[in-house]
Image 1 (cartoon, rainbow, N blue to C red):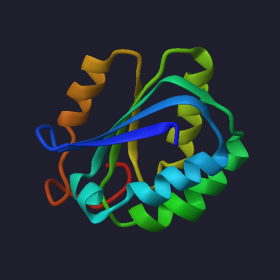
Image 2: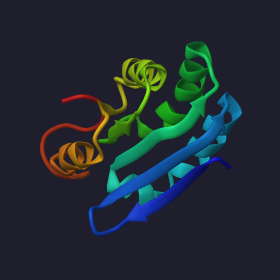
Image 3: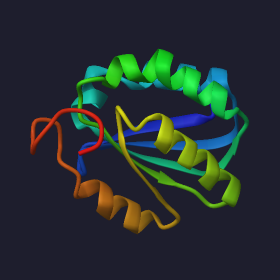
Image 4: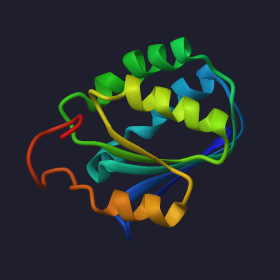
Length: 135
């Protein structure tokens, strides 16, 4: 699997580093195994796409989000900071941001320190107003 996952207990977030070619089936497999109770309790993720070749269409991304991600995150609070390096990655990250709007507060960054600072400012599950999605 070209996606490595680490639970960062110090910062109370999930780190996902994507590398190599990532296809729609890779996405589905990654997200299906990602949402354990432990990960869901963290409620936020730092996703590093900078070394990834995102080889899926917007339609494929939308389908995986609707079939795998939305059932896991609906009614929960989740925040995702996406790290990108190229214009293509930025465009695909924007697609994610638009398609996942109902289940995730998402921001896109080129700088890891800025991404981490934003993510750490996001409320943890059970803190602050509301449930999942954008606030």
